[in-house]
Image (cartoon, rainbow, N blue to C red; front, top):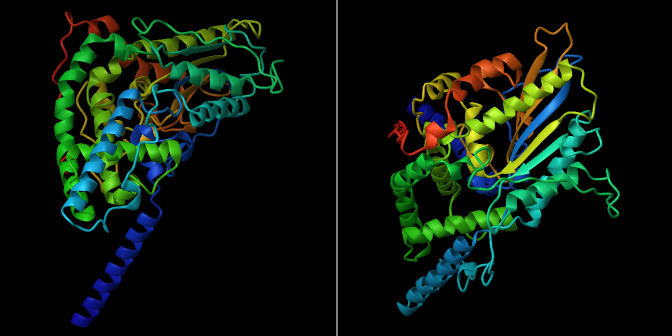
Length: 480
């Protein structure tokens, strides 16, 4: 009996070990970089259990809204200086080992004498070549997917393109240009690619409440300043644990700041340079999963469902989306001449825009959680690995991450005449407010998803004198 039990336990252990090895072998760190993840490595990661709706026969798209994040970008000037500081400190740590006549055997060869790939660069934060490709290819794919929407001759009133304005580094407008070059390729007469000119408009960052509401909302800026220390405190135990592990593993006296900088370097190397065996190679897959979770935690609390103001301040954008759909319906009902009305409204901005808009739509939630956010109740924080979670920055808002809302007109034999299809990163996604489907009657979409948010007014939400930020602490998961 005892021998049989021991044999069973051994078999179970070997199975678990085999499964763990499969997970480690299949771990692609490039898919686990939170919002620094490149679009092409995650755009086809979708919920395999979700079955998209069949579009009824006779239903045709008549309008498209796009809210997209800029493509992959270079590190900012501030973060490049941080990497220069890391290089200097790593040199000191290696020297300490040598001066104490200890072996450097455990220290990876790349780390000795390492210098930042961005050393000496005077500017940063710009859209890089990979980012241009992401948006260019996205433009082509959208045109091919919805040919009836993009069959008109270009006019800025038919295909409206807007981008945020950022002083010095206009990566969102550069992304819009790359997208437009793909969308309108072979539609003009410029050069061998038969490109054509098109307009991208921007509003002053000081007054752009549709795409840079986070910059215009004083209450949000106060909330973020006040909450950031608490977020850092939540992340601290994880960084302390990993710092201790890496000190033992490599025999170097790493500080917590070193680990933070090495994690940042890992993300930049893996996403921008496809280097995964240097900074990322210092960490085990389980440590990388924890570091990813700390980033996701920060995005959740400071940009996502962790505080209702994070997404409520995006109501001007949500209102603009619905208005564009209503105008398209009016044009359809009044039988306006093709070429005389808007068919797509295309917006290019930042994670601070895409994440709140995703929350306004109620994506990545269970239905019970949707009711919570509509009652302005805090949600539980994303659970700590190895527990699974819906909220992953790499999926919610990678570089070039996007939400598309496609308005369909359907024939008389379909119960509702107009429907909205919701796509996230080009894939149909379940919308809790629409009974978990991706294809939602327009009136239901307005009633269940839009109306609860549009009761809020941007000025009332964001003016310091009229609405102090509530101390709405997220519920802490028991595993944290």
